[in-house]
Length: 125
Length: 108
Image (cartoon, rainbow over all chains, first blue to last red; front, top):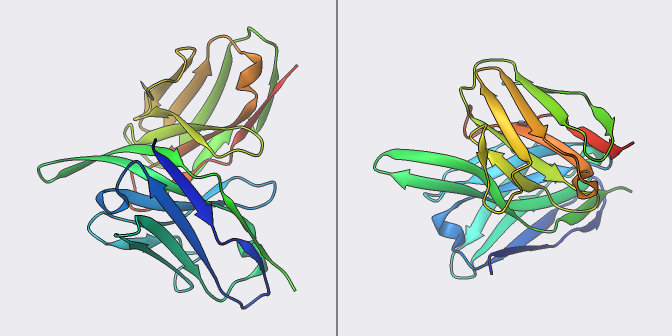
């Protein structure tokens, strides 16, 4: 079964750090694009970061320089290292698989088709 | 940055009604648009990709259309289990994705 399971959320003080994990089963993380998406309480979805199968990483302006996305291939796990946390980072964080298909030099994108259940991060003193 | 504007922000309809949600992009995004459904306390679920293609396993009462800057998401006959918030997402500007602000659908 294709599945993503997040962990690592919790309560952290402003300025603190936290590392989220997203364990995948049923598919290979390193062969896919993988994203983190967050949702602040009562708010909409906000894309946070993506790691491409080739290893390139990209970030939303709101987290650039503070968050780092990475993966551990042998553990088939995606990570999000969050530093210098702020109150506005409080949210449920989801990991998601970006469904892609590669044909020659072209990459076709078909949406985020597998999502984890989410892990809650609360930044508060 | 590409901005996505959904309307309405909330909607109340009766079971069996035809429901339509629109999403407008701040610039031409071709057909690079997805639609997601999020039920309370749950993760989002992909319903439509490439503006009009139904994800495998999604009921045929859901559909999407549009290209360029104007897109429409339709539920042909609203069912009680369709109560959720719906989001559009553009991916013309990869690797930077943008979601619309969401449309909360309730039963009248």
